[in-house]
Length: 314
Image 1 (tube, rainbow, N blue to C red):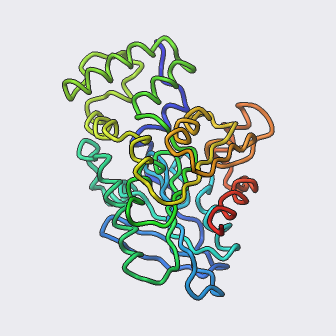
Image 2: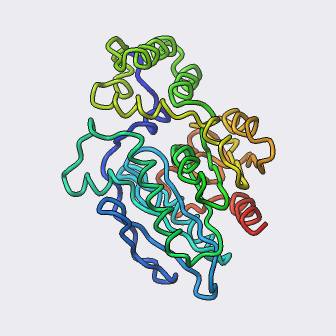
């Protein structure tokens, strides 16, 4: 029986409870903040900056914590992103996804989660810091699934938006395209099941190899995710936009970034050929790429930070 491959599994809602945070950021001016009863995060503010720019970092799919980690995947990508911003005088706030808190408290109900929940959480974060009036500008940085969430949260609220490895199509089209490359025998079955879900609200017939995507508990979440089109949401933004993708990204193809650029021709656009999905530079092939997902000491791409800092400071 054909099964969904590892890179597709990373799109799932649940992969296990997020990793506990590393030791407190003792070398940084850090503050722990609760935005709501489900959203906790870490604020890093350079002590030398009187009213700095703030970057709000929104993570990708699954129960991902503020550092970009999950129980079976620890790479510290978002932690290193926040720290690199700090060294350049840019404040940042990164937070645990609501399902991380719910899993830890034993209150998680997979069937009750909707994509809109993550959008609402991101908006709550942006609104919290807008009311603080302690920052000269607010930028939203969305990684992977967080790119789409960030596009919506930034509308009418942020001063700039950065998409890191963000999809340019609705999620069902992204998954079908992935299957075409990784498990072509499942592509047509997935397309039919997604179409059924769009029309009838539920997909009842699908290959057992696609159960991780179409099992009944996760279908309400997938259906609400499918209602958001990244091209439509990005086109609504009237603020500066930076689109970044990696040439070694196994999950989000460069063609997805090209689609985003097509609807936002005035956006800054950077493809970092050596960078993978979790923002790390890869010199070798797929084996090195896969291993990097569990190499927390591996730094993020310097070229990425050059592009992000240049965009924010411009």
